[in-house]
Image (cartoon, rainbow, N blue to C red; front, top):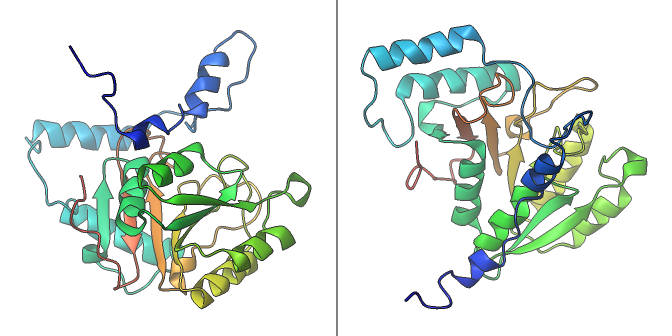
Length: 258
């Protein structure tokens, strides 16, 4: 007979995903479902053909823990060309099984008991759960609908007052869709530099922008770990994701799952 308490306390404290809760509720006739972050188009045929070709060629075995060198090199070139993140090479790129997975690995690597991680409010639901699983504390930074969910006075006051070790910056934002202007992100980064805070820049939605222009802070700041993914841009939810680090002080190559 199993013991009454099987799970660790940290698991019991994590709430079920609100995204999937409301996704189930939205599966009714006449309801437009805006819950799951999934594009409404298919994965491009060229990508599917390349995957089939790789399978037919027998590319089914273990790869280096950081990911296939050719892929890491291509990602580095993309980040330099499109995001102006220079001084990158394949050794500073890690490939994972998904954006959520790599975000969790970073939080687990940088935050622990007694640490505080600051996140936007509202924010993607998984941030809070990942922080709690790391036995760290969540500190919310206010975004207001009347300000278009762009950081304002309250946000910066709370950022100045926090003793957080790590900030998760998400622009374009999930679930708000807000795109932070370059000067706003630089203002945030300047505060983080002063406070010696690491920043995870979650840029998964960088291509799904209708107004404004995307800015990657890692092109000017060294305390940034940039997280991006193929899932949204190329409708590859469930395929793979990637992470890059400009800072030589950050080494996450071990414990990386490909």
